[in-house]
Every structure is written in C-alpha cells, then in structure tokens.
Length: 105
Image 1 (cartoon, rainbow, N blue to C red):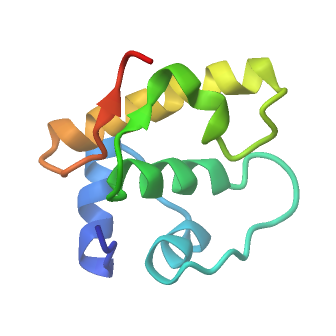
Image 2 (image 1 turned 120 degrees about the vertical axis):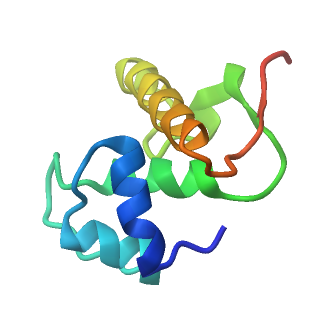
C-alpha cells in the first residue's frame, strides 16, 4: 500500500500515537533522517510499512528473518514480535488492509 499524507492521520488514530515529522517523511517519501541512537521512531515506521506492505504472507514463527535488527538479539526479537502484532492488529481493526501471516511452518 502506498502511504500518502492523507493516510497519516488515519494511521495515527488507529495506533493512538502522534508520529514525529521524521517518521511521516520516511513513511511518505522513504527518507531516513533519524537522530542516532534509540527511541528515534525507526522501528515503528519499519513495522507500519511492513504491516501495510503487499507480498507473500509473513511467517510468524520466523520473526528473526524479518526484524530490522540482527537475528541474534533474542530479547529484541521477542519485543519486535509483540510490537508488530500490536500495530498490525490495530491497523487491521481500523480498516487497513494488512499483510497476511502464516502461523505454521
């Protein structure tokens, strides 16, 4: 799905968040101007984009293969799985077409 400026308020409402300007710019124009370090909003944008993307269903038993970090970071992978599922479900519950998931291997 192409994310446009008109969709941003709907995404924010669905997720009950206010996106930073850098996140909005990234979602619309694929421009990464984030400050260095943690808590910049990169992962939230990555998850939104992934949840709204088209393509083959994502295999949820294999989150490590499609997180935005190294596959060896077990704690991060668990956190990412929870965040992805939360964001995906919120978007779906608010009328967005989200990426399908495969639950088995």
